Each structure stands twice: as structure tokens, then as C-alpha cells.
Image (cartoon, rainbow, N blue to C red; front, side, top):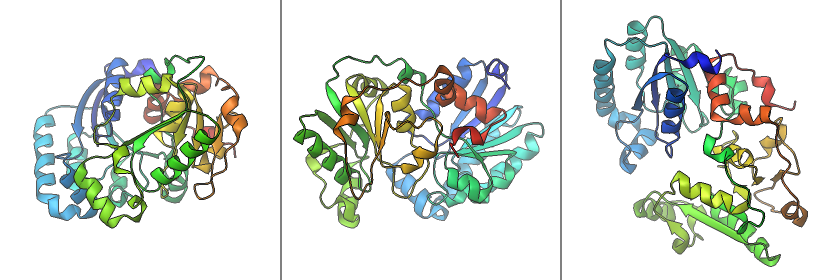
Length: 341
């Protein structure tokens, strides 16, 4: 299916809320001409609800089931060409079984931007889907899924590259695992060589910080004054990107799939420092644009900070874009395209 073939396709789309990426996907599908009914995968996005769903989903099962019965009532008399699920951490099996009966001519598509190690519930529902994809190469191999990395939204490609950016290095991200230790070490290195750096650590709430500081050893050295409890909007992020030369990406230690930040940085024409050495296996990897560090032995090179970004081809930029991503999701997908070997 080419991009023009999205026109008038009816899509039922369910996804967890993730920094408004779910809305960007729905809006892009509509922009391409599809008719989209979107529902949040979770019945609530409170910190308590998210925590219970991840740790002990059965405690919240009654509310989850009621939420999905209500969705079934809303769509009972509609017909869809596609059902598209992203992540699958809360959706119950009875809903998928009922949907199969109601939507006999509908193609069921599953995609995850989380590893199955962090979201084991998804494994129990994969058999409902006609097409199954993951952003994680290792999970794709292990569970026999199609491999499709993430994307950047259109606003990143249109970022202006300032000749003399305000910051040499930029880190924006949620505070978790060893991110503070790594980013702080890099900031100190930048200071030593008179390279300007800016960091923004987002924390969901003061309660979450309190719990992490008590039970997560990686937070024992975290400077509370550097935390922000307000998430940055897309326009604020774009402004920071415009003012920066290099973007720092620190993946979760238990996650090997490339982050959204990876594609946003390269799509914006920015150089990337990352802790994820998996990137060296991807076709767009270029040591001039991407510098891989060992999270336990950080060793940076001045020349990387002083050289210019080598532009990617228009073909590659399209494949990395949200439009290229959707084309792969809803049509034939060539997993081997993304890897060097």
C-alpha cells in the first residue's frame, strides 16, 4: 500500500499515551486520508494506574475490562479496514477475540516500541494479529516478528541548523536508571574543553522521585535541583534542537531497540552521542554523525564535537520519517533494509 492508498481507509487505533506520539501517529494517518478512531490503551494515565498495570495488572482487571466493554459498545456497528495496536500492556484477550468476530474483514496489526522484557503481557496476545512488528532487533529474532525501527515526526526535518548554536551538547529526557551519572560525566567533560552543554531531566511527579530515591540505587546521587516535573512541549524541544549541535541519547540498560531520540536527532541533521552500540548495525550509521560510548567507561573525542554533520539521503530521511514508518507498518516491510549485516 502506497501513501496515497491510506485515503478513506477506516482504522481503529489503540495505543498507550507516550509524550503525544500516539496523537502524532493518528494525525498523520488522518493527514494521509485515513479515517481514524483512536482510544487510549489504558483506562487512566494516573501514576498509580500505570504502576499497577505494569506490576500487578490483575489488581486493576475489573476496571480494564469495563473500559474495553465500553469501547466495544462505541464501535459495535462500525466496520474497519485495519485494527492497529501499539504496545499491548493492558488490552484484554476477550476484547481482541470479540473484535475478531465483529471485524471479520479487518487486518490486525501489532507494533511495540518497548521490549518484551518490560512488557510480557504482549506475548500472550500476539496470536490475534495478522502482522506483528517490533522496534527491537533481538526481540524480532527471538519471537519471529517483523523488525521495524522507530521514526521522527515532520517537525524535526524542518529544524533550522544555526551556524553557531548555543549548545554543543544537549540532553533532554526522563530521569531513570543511570542517565544522570552518564550525562553529568559528559557535561563535566564538555566544561573541561569549554564546550557548552544543557540538560533537562523530566520526572513524572515528586512522589515518583521520592520512591525512586528510596528504592532505586541509581538515584542516590541525583541532584534534586536539576529535576523538572513539567514535560517539555514539542515546540520547546524543537527550539532546544535548533540551538544545539549534538544530541545525547542514553537508552535504558535493558533495552536494545533504538530510541525515538535517535531518529529525531538524525532527522533534524544533528550529530548523536549514544550509549546504544546496536546503532552500529544499522544502514544509516556513520561514525562522523554518531559517536557510541560505553556507559561504564565514557571516552569522548574532541574531533567529534568540532566536525560537521554529513547529511543523509532523501530516501533515507523518508524511511526514517513517520510517513515511511506508517508505510512499512501497513504494507510490505523489509526488515533487512535497516541492518548493515
